[in-house]
Length: 331
Image (cartoon, rainbow, N blue to C red; front, side, top):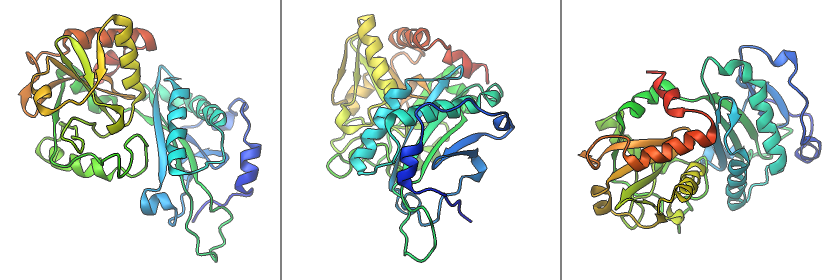
């Protein structure tokens, strides 16, 4: 069974308001609420047709931010990145970036009463190209399917990494080359990184996979960017070969404010083996120190290193939430 829409996509685009009314009391339940093609509903009622191109081919895009004490982190920047991915894929969601920001804020508000039990949320926006219809199914809506959702951050599952540091392993598979499919687009097709991560997780379920790019330099992991410290300066892979993370950019901005040199450059395995410090960034992790790389201790093996600590403290001060404590409290 699929959910039928009563209005066409064009009318949805016209009728979606930029400012959305306050949540009604009916929204205050024990079920998370999502937004699907113009309607707020319990997330269990969101039904995507089985002929949707995203389900069939991974033909869609998404973005994710997180909340800090219930407040979305750099939501506009995430939505702007989301729409760059959609433009690259040539998908028009029928909702403007401004409307998407307003819908996302409303979803956070409608689920606020459930947040305390989880700590904080991932906030996600997803758009598929829509249904490949034969023409006789009777579906009223075959255009892009749009979902805005929240789900709990995996604070407990990742807490140990903030206590001990992460172990990064490079798998044999390379990151998709930019001349094949740009890694700067955050698409629903993550198979390249999923398949690459499998042998790493098979050897150590707690390890983090970071792929090399087509030239043999560090690229990125599934949802994470990587930084190293060499001679007291930060280095991170060039944007051409990775998804430019919003937390990656924030870390680079903080480095500039703190007077820490930072450069985008090619980082090969020799550079990584000789790193004084290493850390991962992502929206959910923020900054996660790395203790080992391919089985070898990073620097002196103690985490966080001094530059990682300075950046972490600045990050915490900027977002107004001690995310390290938030994770460690779940141990």
